[in-house]
Length: 377
Length: 196
Image 1 (tube, rainbow over the protein chains, first blue to last red):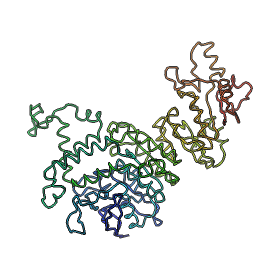
Image 2: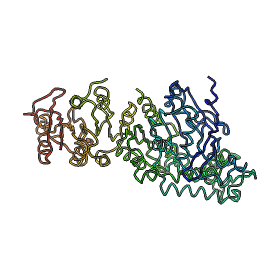
Image 3: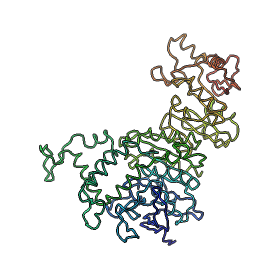
Image 4: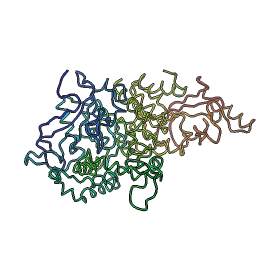
């Protein structure tokens, strides 16, 4: 089968207009995506995996920029918990991002220039609407499941609330139904770091070829701390000192070099991130997250988002995740129970904080595999 | 499929076909799976132990990790035909509050518990002077999850005082039924079907 729509490193130009929550509309959207496995003749085995803030569509294939394996290769593949021998898996780059989907770095057809800050502010629901256009393009009416962690989990929730008839099951991992003041606060630090970088130039830095890498790196460093746990950082780095590049043992320099291993690690994380991510996209996507409040979209009652839903839900949190702690998952579960929805919830134990959903977790594997498989038994 | 625990078998045999059921303290979902597979029941569960929840979800059941003492308040009134509390009442902090929730959420409630007045338990205390460790109460006093031991007669008095109707009761010795008459002495387990 050589259907051009299916496979790795695909792009689709989808006719709009796509009306956005902010009031603007996009005449058309381009979406970068990948598919894995084979769509059944009745198109009933499609699983959409939604990525997190800085993730992308390279779910289970090597990343074209970093060369590293896809971000969820341990979860998705032949024989894996999301088994591509059974499921047709789709992962698309979110609207507003920078890996092939329409975002601030794409060309505004009206001006022929890159959008920059003229790109309309988007929401999680807008990302979901764009994904729905992609599914239409792929000939998929109804998803067997939508699965996501972190911001991906918010998209999964938004999918179930926005297109309940298109979602048979939703797996929502390490997520929240609304961004808290603390979540917004951390994002604001990141955005201000980018905007304080003189190279940002109000978002019009594309032509300069000199993007606000320093600001973006600081934003990433601050955010990265929220993905880890204190215990995890202590176990990995403690107060250990960083060896010098010439091999000399680490020592306090009584200066401001990266004396501590944790500093060196964060600097590396920040810098590496700037190679693959656009600063404006970071602004737009964090904004979308901060605006996310699913209850607000439904008259202030989260249960209303799931009224009469036939979707099955599986909510998973991690005990050391302080970015989207278990209490936030419990809020979703209570709303789902109040709505009479078929919901499962488990808090898994991990030392790794929010990032646990990306790491080795046999319990998560077991839950995801079982939840997806049994719904069809 | 392995055989159900005797009290669960009684419950499974007495839940109406196609009912909506909330199993509070559902463990790994053995009863829920049996109800789903044999009686087409729409079963939901609440379970405190994450390992058990993961096992239940992995077998396709809708189970929420939570605590009967704190997490029942969020369930709407009369949202289930039956609420089930099997071998869990005696482990709760406030059994009377849990029971109130059960009868609020379910139109009927099944409650099963080990009888602390079974003759073996009495003998252990009377002759041995020690807290009983029996087949049904296998854990020593310092480690037992059973913090509110209850006897069949205690429970009968309790529901009477609270004006709760006992629709049916079953008393078990091992996997065999025993009569209601001497149940407080002879039964290891009791199962009550209650309604407001």
